Amino acid sequence: MKPGFFAAAAAFAFLPAMLCAQERGVHPNPVAQLEGEPYIHDPSTIVESDGKFYTFGTRGGGLVSADGWTWNSGPVRPGGGVAPDVIKLGDRYYVSWAVGGGGMNGGHKSDVKIMWTKSLDPASKDFKFHEVGTVASSDGFENNDAIDPAFLLAEGRLWLTYGTYFGTIRMIELDPKTAERLPGNQHVDIAIDMEATALMHRDGWYYLLGTHGTCCDGPNSTYNIRVGRSRSPLGPYVDNFGVPLLKGGGKLAWGSNGRGMGAGHFGLVDLGDGVEKFSFHYEADMDRSARSVLAILPLTWKNGWPVGQENLRPGTYEIQSERGGALQLAVDEVRLPHSWRGWDAPKEPVKPVPGQTLAQNQTTWPASTIPVDMGYYQVRANQHWTIEPVAGAGGWFGAPYVKIVIAGTTRALAATPSGDVVAVAEFSGAPEQLWRIDQLGDGTFRIIPKTTPDPFKPLALSAVGASTPRLVRFDPASEAGKWTFRKP
Image (cartoon, rainbow, N blue to C red; front, side, top):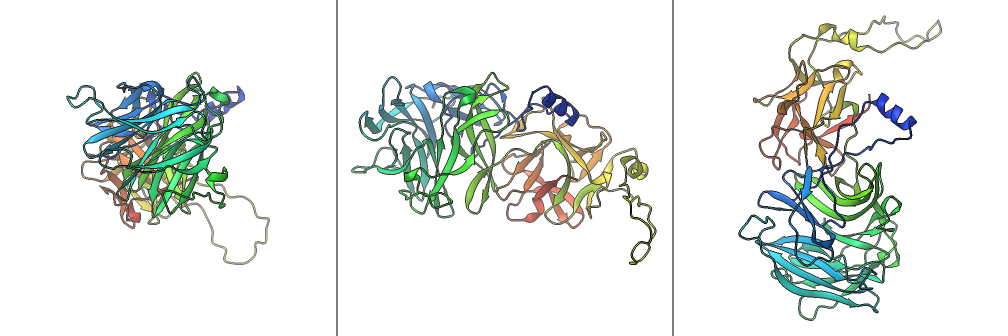
C-alpha cells in the first residue's frame, strides 16, 4: 500500500449560515480539516506500516491513522530532536532526524542521525529502533545548520537534503541499502533562504520543495511552500522564472489558506492511479486554538510544476463527464414553453425568460428510486447536484465522505451492488450513499463510493457509454472515469 495524505473535515454550513457567520466576523474554513487530534509540528512523510499510517514530528512524537482521515497520538520514536523524515527501504523503515541546531539551545551546531526499525507499530515484535549513526553535521560556525533532513530514492540512488535559513540547503548521497553515507561523498549546496526541504522525482525532473517565511509564531507565522526543479539531483535548481534557488528563488506551491496559517514541511503522498496529495502542517489552525496541525490536500500539476489545491468546496454543481454528458436523473423531459418565431429580428422589446424551476421539473419524477444517466446539459433541476460533507461519516486520505443530492431535495446518489448508480428518495447516511471525491493530477476528479472494496484500487463512477454511468475499476489512462464540477 502506498502512503496517502488527506485533509478532512467537519460538516460545512449552508450558504445563509455562512453569510451570517461572515457578518459576525467569523470566517468558515473553506477546506476540510482532518479529524481526531492531528496535533504535530514538522511532520515527516506519511508511511504505511502493518495496515496503519504514521507520521513523526519534532521531539519524538507522532500520529497514527487507520484511514488517513482521523489521526491520533502514535508511537514515540527515540532520540527526540527535530523535524524527522521517514522512508521505507526493503523491509526497513529508516528515520532521519536532527539533534541540536535550529538556532536554539544548540545554536547552529547539529547532527543529522539515522535509525531503522522493521515496523512502526509498537504492538509488533519487529518494532525496535537500531541506530545507523550520524550522516551529516554542522559545527555552529560554517555556513549551514544541519537540521530538517529529507529522503529521496530515485533512479536507484538515495539522497538526503538538510539545512535551514542559516546558510545553505545541502544534498548528500546515501547507500540505498543501508542509509549510511557513501564513502567520500561530499555535500553540495543547492538552495538558500528556506528550510524543511523535501524532494520529488517526476518525468526526468528533480523537484526541491522548501519552506520560506517564518515559523513558530502561531497565526503570525508566514511559512509558505516553494519549489524549484533541476534535471540533476545536485542542481542547479531554478524556479519557473529561471531564478536559482541558490539566489533565493522558488515558485509558490501552497501557503496560508482559509483558517490555516503558515504552511510548511511538504511531504508527497502518492495514492496511485494518478492521485497525488501532499501532507504538511499549518503553524496555526484557527479553529483549534491556533495549534500546529497536520493537513493533507490534493496535489495537481500545471506546465510541469506541482500546485496545491483545496478539496472540492461544498455547493451545487453540474457534474460533467469528460466524455461529454452531464450526470442527471433519468426522467422524462419537461419542456420550457416556447413559440418558434424564426430568425427575424424581434418586433417587440426583448425581455428575460425565466428558467425552469425545481417544481416544474419534478412533475415527471416518480416517488421511488430513479435511475441515473447522462445527457446534454440544459441547466435543469434534474442535473444539479448539491455536495456536502457528512458529519460523523469519516473520510479517506484528505477527502471527507460527502452526500451528493439533487439540489433542493433529499434524493441522493447511491451505488448498487450491480454497479449501477441510482437516486434514492431519501438520504439515510448508508455507506452506499456516501462518496469520496479525489482530485487527479490533471485537475479533474474521480468519484468513489464508500463501499468500494479496495480504496487503493477503487471502483469509480465512469462513463461506460455516451449516456451510461457505472461503477467500474478506475483506469487513470481513460477519460471515462474523470469528471469536472461546474457551478450552474
